[in-house]
Length: 433
Ligand code: SF4
Image (cartoon, rainbow, N blue to C red; front, side):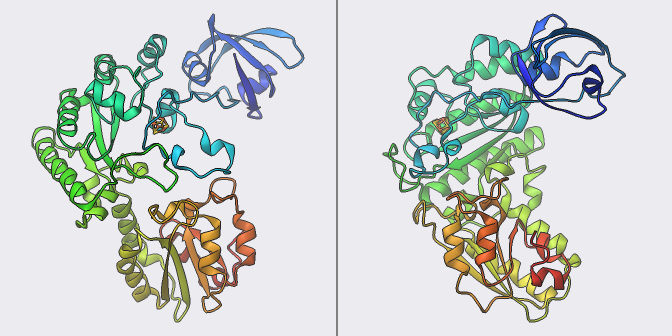
């Protein structure tokens, strides 16, 4: 059964009399377990839908749907499948106590992998789930592989019952499913022969593996499970050498790079980051692969849209790892606009100094950075620090913070998104609603 959360006014479901709270029971005789069933089983044009209204009345609807017309029922979110692993490097295990409960949810859900691109390990996938993936052709999936040798993977996921990922992927690949995959690389566990073996195994799955991202292990001062070494420059450099070897082969044999190192590997090893062309369609940008190249490209392309901001003093708050990359971008914007930029790199007060990502800065860090800066006309903060509810990770509300600061403050993804707003309203904060 799935429950309706909203019905689009004027839609087919609206005309049928379905309302929020209605339980959708079956479609063409098949029971509904979740949004996937609803989405795929209602793909036909002739439908018999059994439903139970909030009044308790059960109704069977016979529906002939005009081609391409949506039914118009939005469903309550599914119960997320929890992760059965206990990876030492798990970011959630590295969260401090006392944050909002949803932040501690370790999801591992192939349905969300298909629907939203969340990475899943497939550790908790049962036979019936495999059958569904194949029947509904849930492709591409985003899979956290970490290692293909079974024993190594059990150690990495800290789960002796983890299934053999190579068998799972092979079976799904034979059914036409494709994957974007990732490996979190942990020094001493999956960085040398295991890395090489894993890349070879994934390569042997042919076109089924669309891309592989190599991401360095990242731990915070609260990562109580992690006993290993942190990733260092030398190790990061060796991983990038493996990337180069495999991408050379991939370019020659299949015409795309196939394997990518995350931006952090380049920053750690102090190697130059590739340009935007390197990343093709940026299929793993959410994984920190090509994010810097994308930012550089957006700034370069957006310069022409910027107004003059002569003499205006603009503060830019960022994390420690991104700070060295900012001057080249801000210099270009300053030249085009006449604005004067002040870069404000901040250490992370919640996660500790080893967490240097700009997007993980918390409200307290932004407050510390800006509350005494009466010299600034405007401040930009990383937009990734705020969730859809307007909250920082430490539960500070952006609106409250903004009102307490001595200058207009804007969340920004790429500077252009804010600075291209007209100059004067921008500087008086009238765009800040
Ligand atoms: S798979 Fe590992 S890293 Fe991902 S949520 Fe589970 S324990 Fe954490």
